Structures are given as structure tokens and as C-alpha cells.
Length: 48
Image 1 (cartoon, helix red, strand yellow):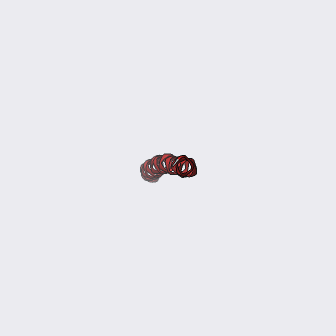
Image 2 (tube, helix red, strand yellow):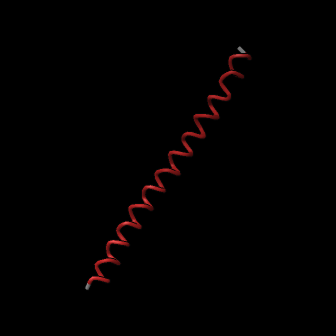
Image 3 (cartoon, helix red, strand yellow):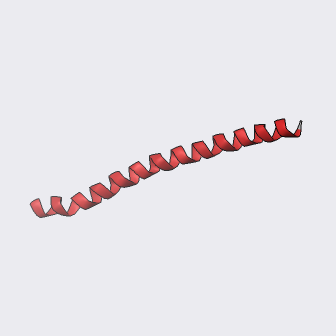
């Protein structure tokens, strides 16, 4: 019974970690887009 309970908990923890990692990847992509926009901003001002 204890092993079965431990496996259930491990499965739950694994799912939670997977969700956190997925969210981190999504945020990382957004940050990269924002940084790219910030890098392009001075170039836009120089054209104007």
C-alpha cells in the first residue's frame, strides 16, 4: 500500500513540475520577443 501511495504522489509531483516547466518555456519565448522588440526600437527611432 505504501509503494502504491508513493507512486501516486510521484505521478502528481511529476505532473506539477511538467506544468511549471511548460509555463516557464512560454514565458521565456515572450521575454525573447520583448527583448527583440527593445533591440529594434533604437533602429526605428534612427529612421524617423
